[in-house]
Length: 394
Ligand SMILES: Cc1cc2nc3c(=O)[nH]c(=O)nc-3n(C[C@H](O)[C@H](O)[C@H](O)COP(=O)(O)OP(=O)(O)OC[C@H]3O[C@@H](n4cnc5c(N)ncnc54)[C@H](O)[C@@H]3O)c2cc1C
Image (cartoon, rainbow, N blue to C red; front, side):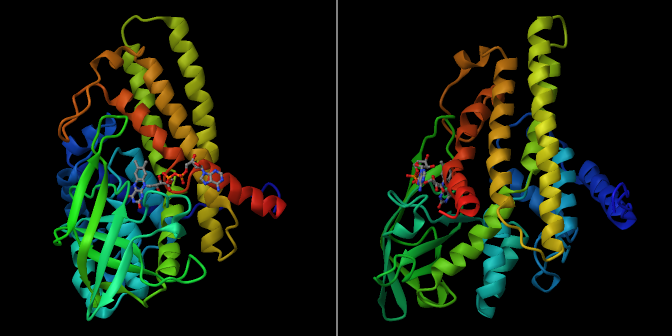
């Protein structure tokens, strides 16, 4: 209907108000302050927040009620993420909740669900994702880590690469090749491996931002019980794809963009709070406004994607468009943040020794770390290939 105004969903508005009230009163001030200035969260802060959400019954916004989740529909989940971002509450640690959890709920055995879901829900057990390998990133199906059957166990040998948080995680879900098939997507299985298993070595990779996020994980004759394989042997690619679809939808989530926009807006205001160069400030604010307008567009696209899924219509490649656009917008915001500081932070930069950030250089760290946004979760080039294929058929 042309010109018709969509009716206000009062239930949804009441829900939005409830989430906002919770976010502002229950998220610990030190965590909100850290998020607001773009600091990095460690396991301790993340787990504390997860525990608070869990005790309120909001531990798993994206899981069905039977599995201990909220049972919210996609629109409520979307609103929840948006409000949390607007209030500078951290995102929930995603590997267990958003990636592995839905796979276990769909394909895991009852024993696996009983064993693994509670620890994800209350935040006491941390997972990491062991997919990528040297030579198997965008082309993940080329992975070479082998799992050879020996009685009631697989003996796993190989190397995983870029494994985020492996240094502080308890468990790793990982894809390994359990048989050699003609098609490289076949013969792959999904295994669940405790990181303290004999034969596992985790070696840090220092990234350009000086932080320790990612690791190499070496697996040397690691014995994994067959009972810790998810679903059928050789079907891991399908489970992995199911999981990556969740990751992609997560990537289509514009909440990080909302957080970052608020943060950089404050940074620019603070930098020029006293006197300052009015011309420089005007130029930065002009750039900020342009990104803000594009962010509103990305937000509208995210909302439209949710409505499409709720209406059970095909989503097409909207998730790829949002991933492509929002990752680039995040980088533009990082660039504005860094320019606002006049690059004075560069001389203060030191590679980190542990996981405690030096105060005051977050704008620089975020700029450096932000390079990864157009690489992980499906690089921009790969997203463009997906879009070109759907538009031009090749
Ligand atoms: C900080 C960080 C955290 C990560 N965390 C994890 C994690 O927790 N678990 C995990 O399993 N992996 C993780 N990854 C790995 C990430 O998924 C890969 O880096 C990503 O898939 C790209 O793979 P690659 O690094 O091997 O690069 P490649 O795939 O070798 O790509 C190199 C370049 O070539 C381009 N390219 C590749 N294929 C094509 C193509 N067909 N057409 C056009 N261009 C192409 C890419 O866009 C890129 O620019 C992480 C990576 C980083 C940097």
